[in-house]
Length: 261
Image 1 (cartoon, rainbow, N blue to C red):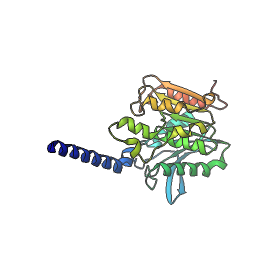
Image 2: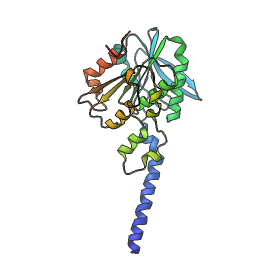
Image 3: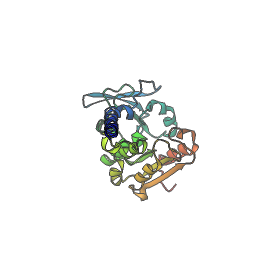
Image 4: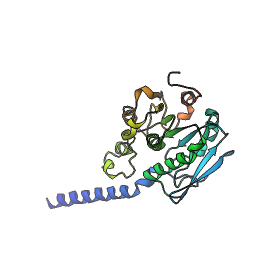
């Protein structure tokens, strides 16, 4: 009996130690910082905010409307430059490098990314008639927050989720992930605050964001302003290989476009 008790105690202590390690390393597991890169033809907007310098790629052609892009947790946003110029010829483009990414200073966190997103919007808002926002994966959490806090004209969410805490719980069912997670990105809470035309692009076989987590977010959005495109056969990281992906984005952001088109 004593040996069984010792085994149980050892098991509990090991589990608690494992939880402590995961808690301590969670941001390193969520944010995969990217090195500095180069984007030919782009200018750099240095956002001086909260004692940090945030590097924002600016692809500008003196248009009267802009798109702000927030990328995934391991994404070099500069890699989108050529495609975005082709897809969105009627927009100036702003691609944010999160804190610690691509030459930006500081360390990423949910509140830091939210604060930087608001600061970028506020910095450029007087230059444009309208500002639209695109978020991908982790960036959808930032995009939803900005859309709920600022007057965003259009919002595209690529492989979004309802709650990062729930996504973590799906990947680590043996951990109390929803209790441990610091950066929760509770997009479903802000979903009802979104009143702009919204496009959601879903990967049918998304191995990173469980489909039920995307569907849970969709349920919070205004159906009268919503278009959902499911890419048949697509996974989380190969959306760009599907013609329907570019077609959906191009159509949604086309001048004078509407969800009915």
